[in-house]
Image 1: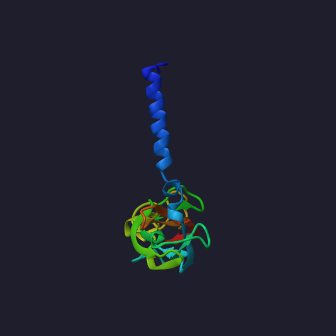
Image 2: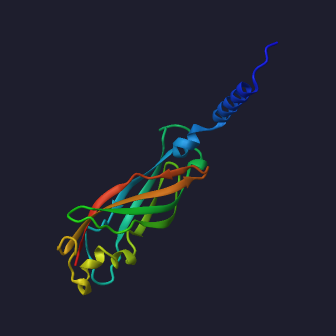
Image 3: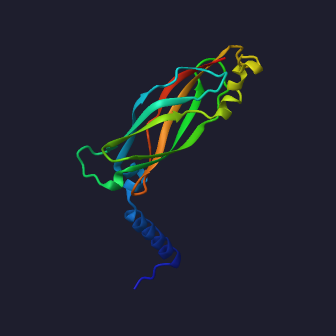
Length: 186
């Protein structure tokens, strides 16, 4: 009878356990968001121009999320329904300048059934703090009404929004990103 050296046996055992553990792991849970795609399908009332002086609410009037199965016509279950937990709004400069507001992240209590939709109304895109800090605060009358970086009375930002949630089975999902441009003026 041939004896296998202890180190070779230990390596073989470790490889075997790793393969066995990997075989039990579901790739669906790791990669496909529970078999559904969360998509922003409609958005209305996107602000195009915002005057920063006065009490300003930067919001989108209406935005709709759809939850569709990744395999059209495939089997679905209630475990594929999505609880929307939060959304994120990020900014980049569309014109001159480099300074941008910090990202805005907020909770979003919503529920999108598989093969269904959920609509959010008057969703904030920024906090008042973001309007009261650079670069947008430069445009306030009391601060001169001019972007100190560019010398312009306008800051043009690309606005990007996306949503995050979980299926009822616990799989993380995120929506596509929708982008549009807003001009902030003094």
